[in-house]
Length: 174
Image 1 (cartoon, helix red, strand yellow):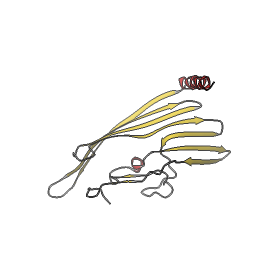
Image 2 (cartoon, helix red, strand yellow):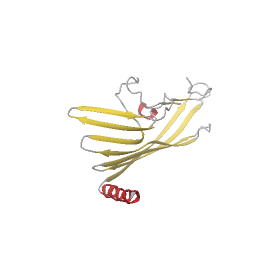
Image 3 (spheres, helix red, strand yellow):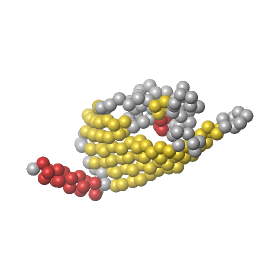
């Protein structure tokens, strides 16, 4: 009986996904950081490629964001692949659910994090990156309940994820 229900739900979700729109976007970015002293020391040569995928449907959605980085200065972190976000959305009449690795942004101010403290930050090269790029996605469940002009948002984060800092002795350490 459970197998029949599972197969039925799979076909139901497949039908929903066939009516959905799939979109891919991305970009390439290059950083060069040079220390302006006598030796003109190259501190960083970094290439970055991001690929984002978005599935839009009436009752179901999905999103992923993948970063591939290459640091040309030949240190320990010369190549890194990271899944920034990957989640599934379920939409109902006045409730939305999101499950997976995600980033939650609560408010925005230039250069400060007052309310936006849900996700940990990657401070390994904090001076060179936009604030949108230092926020790290974490596994969580999110629910939004819409009541007229009001929205109630709830989060469940099963595991604490700390901020990341540069290693001791690095040019970027605090």
